[in-house]
Length: 157
Image (tube, rainbow, N blue to C red; front, side):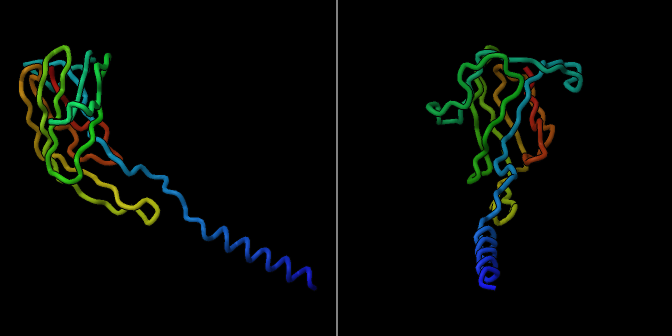
């Protein structure tokens, strides 16, 4: 009888310890803007083909010491972080085709995921502008930057 109580006490203790562990967050909570590079075709940018760029350097405006890409070759797309505390991020994009400034306007939206994962920030792109040194055109393909998004913006060179 005494063994039953010891076993029962041990079992209750084990269940209590295991139930106190918090489940892990298995969801992506950081989302990045994806930009793909395309060949510019004056007739129709809808039928343009993807290109690779070389000597790619990208950094946030005023943050030359914090390079996101540094002289990278054979790049077909890039992912860039957006600032949660503003509604606009500006990047300098340098490559073999020229140096341009790209400004992305967006609305940051906090999204509660769960107690374990906390809050993530999604973005809705509402405006893009760029200089026209190497970039000939740009298009917003998917304005939502979230877990389901792939290509958000196309840059045409």
